[in-house]
Image (cartoon, rainbow, N blue to C red; front, side, top):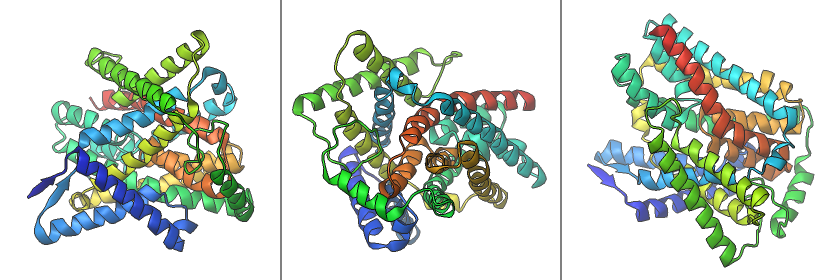
Length: 409
């Protein structure tokens, strides 16, 4: 029996998941010590509970996919609305260096997947499914390419396989990012946890006047009714633009995932209003809605996680996915961290790379928040990762996948 939760019950369940996650992180030293994000902690507990219900009583739970997608789109729109072109100059050469690091990892990820699939005697394209299509690409990319692989390349069950692999990556991306960054910080003495905790605690207790997107999700930010209403209007415009462009470009060479259009719409709207029309943008309101949407999206994504689907993965695919996690950890440690400067910002960037290299940009941001909540701000990381993970990576990934598929065709 499939129990379907409508939007209201899905939202209630997501809030409960977040409260459980917050309680667990506060009470369990292991979760707090290794900087596991609260949505991940609560979401995994919810996934285990739904799996037990399925195994013992045969009931599965389906949440509102539309609501989950809406929160995801609001989060990406908030990234775009935060992207002032003048502020993007602060990223400088680091933005392009990080893009190169990420692009090279996508190639490595696909090489590992295809090579292991070949060695294990299965179709190499299954290795591609367990590569950047699902891990760097996430559920949206997995669904899009799954249809193509099933119809054009005769890979039976490619979509279901992709969803299971993307789910595995989403969970692992949220688990390994925080511990890796903590290890790097402690090993190279990049920050002092005690002093930074005190510093952050002070910031969280006070009202933050300066806009620092996503860096202090627990901080108090003063917003008014008018600013909240205006900001909701901006989000609605971004989502409407994303919906229009998704339908308008469908089947063309300019076709992109909806969330990319939401982010792009935010960038255009922000800079036209602020730099051309001289309209004031309420950054603090954008930040509040963006952080809330991020937490709710992750909670819903993990709440809808069906762990029993992962048990259906073939042994060969499991080997590939586990290997991909190990490769991600090694790459973030030996390449991302060192190339990006071997400093505190580089450790936070490594946590973010683990998040979207295996899961999704919201996971990357949650990983970085878990670190900066303890050790202090990293403006560079929060400037670079959301833009790279949400926008540029999808363009790079799509191009690389197209080249690989042309080779197999």
